[in-house]
Length: 291
Image 1 (cartoon, helix red, strand yellow):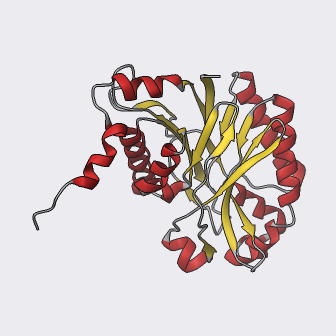
Image 2 (image 1 turned 90 degrees about the vertical axis):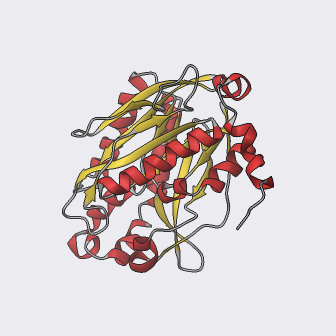
């Protein structure tokens, strides 16, 4: 399969009275994307934090307490994603989830589900100041590529997209598609991730899909303000948009944005493009310095 329709979520943070409210919401989101024939759905970083609302104010106002409480529903959360991926015959990159480790620490984990179950996961590798200094969510230490029916996929969780060697190693391992779930509370934060995504698409001549959290959730201690626009980025070359932005969401609504990606076009642009960013990467390593 060289072509696939991708849906990137501009995902609002909700408040739930009970688990079934969340299950209904996610089912509606996935059903809507399936109705548009999307086969790969991308949800944002920390979109899962809306589940903290299930445990009452004393928990959702406690940065550390909510991480522990959310482990209670993690098995059900995983099962729901697996059920929906199977029912609608598609892949879902679930909103990243703080997952408790054996040593008592947490990892910010993005799970990719297919029709037959979990395809793999990527933990966030480089943590923001908030995660390091306030939330105490720890970094992962392994760059992965996930095998799928459409080939290998890389995942850069938000801040990771701003560090070029992560995506470079994934692309070198065969990933022509990088998924970037993000969560930013300012326009500057959104644009940092966007600039990172576009740089990764430019230098690797690949597709990059960004899915952000969206809107206000004043009740939440963790994701109260969410700014960003779901976007899909491309190489900047023949056959692609001049600005490298294939599609982006609006500024004022939660929504999916859709695009059909021709993954075979990546190899073509690397062989026949105006420039050869991907091929020429190694040349910078052999340059001499004069300082």
